[in-house]
Length: 69
Image 1 (cartoon, rainbow, N blue to C red):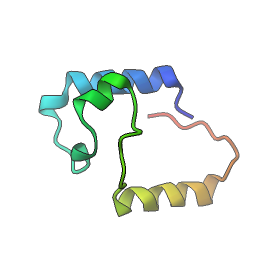
Image 2 (cartoon, rainbow, N blue to C red):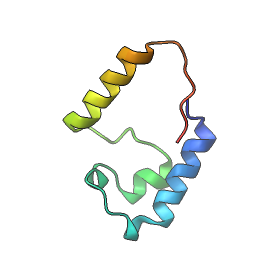
Image 3 (cartoon, rainbow, N blue to C red):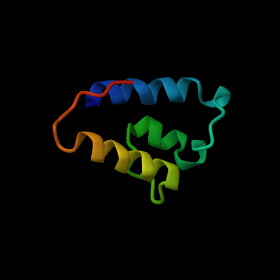
Image 4 (cartoon, helix red, strand yellow):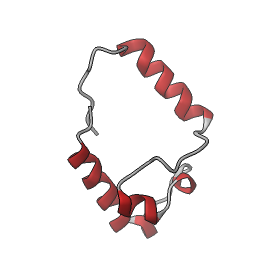
């Protein structure tokens, strides 16, 4: 599980490198989200993200597995 402090570091790095980042999901977030350290503004996740989340859940369920980036 990603700790809140680790998520904050990811958000800070994304914000610092925002202008150089090229990614097909970049439009889902904005600089204000990164400053706030949140992903709650995302309304419609792409199908590939939903599929990956469902696959992860099917494999690991609620076992509390540690996942790091």
